[in-house]
Image 1 (cartoon, rainbow, N blue to C red):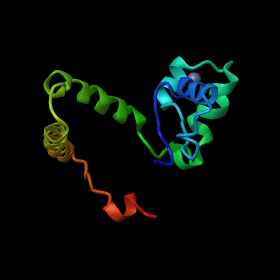
Image 2: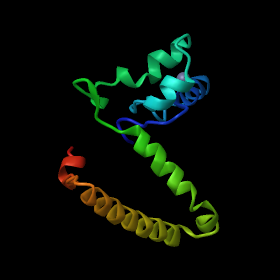
Image 3: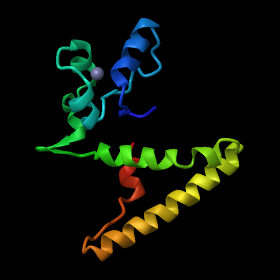
Image 4: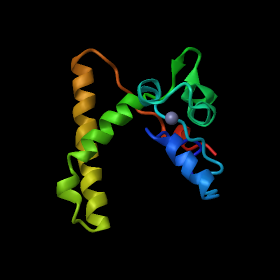
Length: 132
Ligand SMILES: [Zn+2]
């Protein structure tokens, strides 16, 4: 299980887990993504504020900046949605292969676009991502 699972509607997920006494995410933090938290979640909802406020997760913040760009996650999710009609009927291996290829192509395109605009994109070494 991931340590943190960011989701637009985690406060409803948390309420459901609590109501059903489900401990599947017991060791996973469930913050709401920053955009949705600011725009769609009430400050008067104390359960939401207590369990799902992204600012309450120190791992998500570095100084005064977010370490995770959850807006990019949202954009990527919307991009994935564009393949729904294509992948809907695919079996798992083909589905995984297809999306893996699309992701690689998109990443190559994004890197080239960033370099053209004068940025210097870089890769995070895999051992840094999966430290134990
Ligand atoms: Zn909420």
